[in-house]
Length: 407
Ligand SMILES: [Zn+2]
Image 1 (cartoon, rainbow, N blue to C red):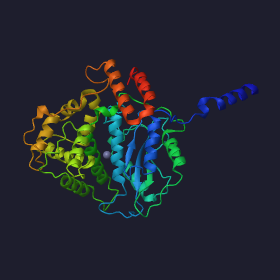
Image 2: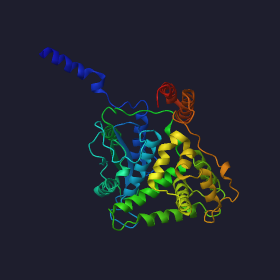
Image 3: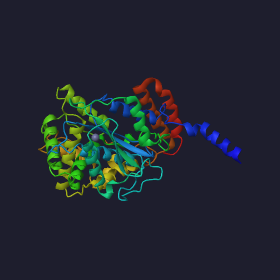
């Protein structure tokens, strides 16, 4: 008996499972480690973000803390609303992936394999001031139950800002692996690489406006802050955004389907005209402000719950189908109303039926076949190949294999 136990122990020690780490040579973990590396080294500057892996045991948002800003102000909430903004992006992605199919069931219990037993947790490996973590957790925990829709811990990962007065993070190569293992577990179990790309059904224009508007509105509603004013902050952003994009009166503000490609085309048009301040987030915020005004003028209910309904239905009906099913008007009617409004004055000749829609993508779309899914996956793989060169052959093979299984 004793010999058997010893043999079993030796087997366990030498089995690949007992020694496995996260498989960072392939997706999705290669991408996750890349995200953490980009954020911890400030490779793209201090820009917050989210990393979502469908069905994983944790999720994370990347945040920057500026040690110069440790007093609450009417425009300083210690980045707490930005943590909510990135959290909303995680929920949007989980809805596009089909992981969250009903947004009225919160709070969703954390699954047994969640890498922590608490819903929200900070990771502060680089020594940012503790107030950033405290305030963001206070706001996240005070969100309504209808926002608590993930079945795993959501980590708020803090990095020092690049402004003078902040100590840069050290030993980042070791810390990025530690962060990855804290969020997803030492073997990164359960995460899936989903193809076709769930982001094909994303309306990028709405994603940004939705995330920022509701992040500020929800942060105000928590009453965690007494000085910070989210409503005023939003008004200021819309005012600045309209100024940067020369709205009203600029025909370049042609958002079309709202896809990432169409938003990129708007950005490029402004850059070509030497007006670089019209970027992703202002474009989405200006458009979302009009959306809210248009809802009110047309007596349409446009709450956060309705917005979530559109995200959950987009992979089933396509963005335009989900929009019309939720609001009773078409995407084209909204876009044309914005273009024609005096406060926007983009193009009075807009025809609703001619505004393009993001095509529904994935096996849950009406009439989808497995051949469509395989073709979409192959297209994603070749797009990945164009971006990343060498690693793409494996990605293409993997994509084809996964396309044959259920999504
Ligand atoms: Zn965003």
